Amino acid sequence: ALALGVQRMAHQNAIVKRLSSGETLGSTNIICTDKTGTITTSEMTVREAWAGDDHYTVTGREHSLKGTLKPAPHAIPPHSPEALAWLLRCAVLCNNGIPPQPHRHRAGLGDPLDEALLVLAMKGGMDPDEERQRWPRIREFSFDASRRLMSTQHKNAEGEFLFVKGGPAEVLSRCSHEMRNG
Image 1 (tube, rainbow, N blue to C red):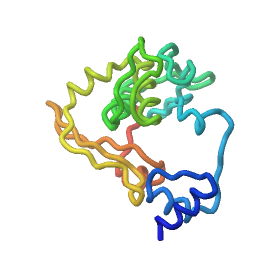
Image 2 (image 1 turned 30 degrees about the vertical axis):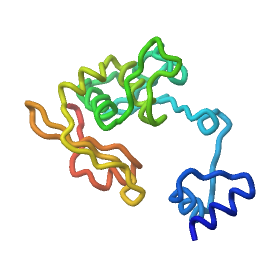
Image 3 (image 1 turned 90 degrees about the vertical axis):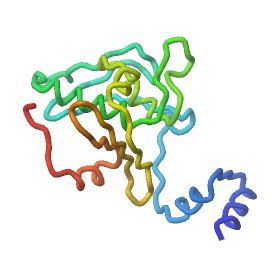
């Protein structure tokens, strides 16, 4: 049935690379798009970040390594650099992208979300290669449509940790603790 649906879509000049995409599209009620280039150029950019109670803005465009991660205007001064470090660590470790290099046209290689998160971490002063070496990956739980999140398990001298990225509702529903004031 999926193959027939994809074939019918192809006759209307819609190409689907994966049959599962056709299934997802078939159960879609609303499609929201934008005109910023995210869809057409497959690029994403992190503009704001929250770590604990701290709010940050990210400067720079698309995959450029030029830019910074700084406290948002009118934000209470950051009081938890530890929370920001954990956020950036998660952005690097729960990520299958290749870290950006200044000489490449694109910042990194991989999924656009992974690229954007690696650029965020680097603008925040984190070296992805060094962080990945300090926190070796033990196991990966790939993104799954039913779980709507990705998880990676890492181990170092401090112990074993699970880093997660995904839909906020799914991630928060699985949390039992939150970091506040360090």
